Image 1 (cartoon, rainbow, N blue to C red):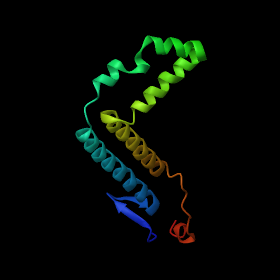
Image 2: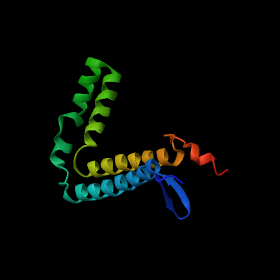
Image 3: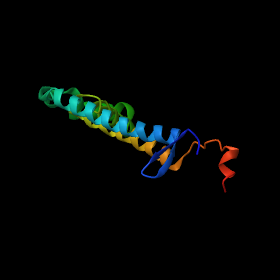
Length: 127
């Protein structure tokens, strides 16, 4: 057994694999704590912007379609949706989802051991 292996419940983990598992836990905990803090401190949405906003008017949509076509309207709606992910309470859900994805990526990288460890000649000597 090399000095780089760690034991957990009788299983051997290489140091890189253990670090990836630890990184996934850190990402998950830190992300959820950050998301909770963002959600708790987020201001209430401004209803005046939603009601009287220029982008919600049928005239704006009609002008946009006349100038750029239906594709331009779809792209403008996508842009508005994407911008809304980075403000207020929706930012908390965005942060939680991104941190959960990063944690899952680290966990899967450790689980499938994408990073092959160098084998030592002493490992085969006992077999």
